[in-house]
Length: 171
Image 1 (cartoon, rainbow, N blue to C red):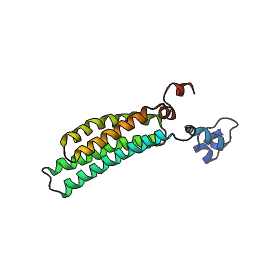
Image 2: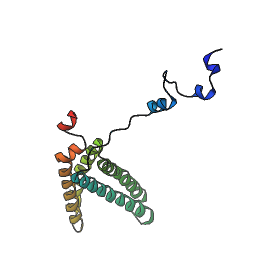
Image 3: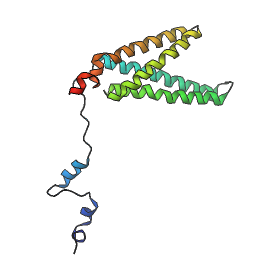
Image 4: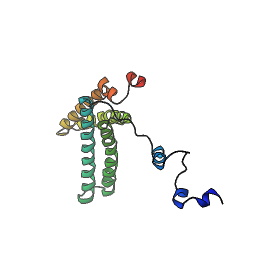
């Protein structure tokens, strides 16, 4: 009789284990190791950068929802274009929102999308500023928020908290 035939069904279905290991040790071995969490409290600069990036993402999402609703309920020249524009802006809002969450959780990858978001905010701010009227204030506010966030993101305190920089490679 073979060993498979004499073993109980539950043992045959489970993953193979090494000799001398208990089922608990085998289960622990199959799990992916947890990523080590960042040490220490989150720096205030990183918290501020995450908050500003999140506010930009929320404002972008609100603008997308507004465009979508006005495309559906308003009287735009082209409803399809307004709806597609609203959906596009909503999808674009995911980048700063994801970056803000990553910054809040101190994920290294989040700095790149956050920097890209801030750099892309400058042409938008210029367009708002050039439009005139009440949009001048919106353009100035957006440019100041983007500049402040860029300064916060390149600050050594924030980069070290994200595990980026010369000190991070030696640890």
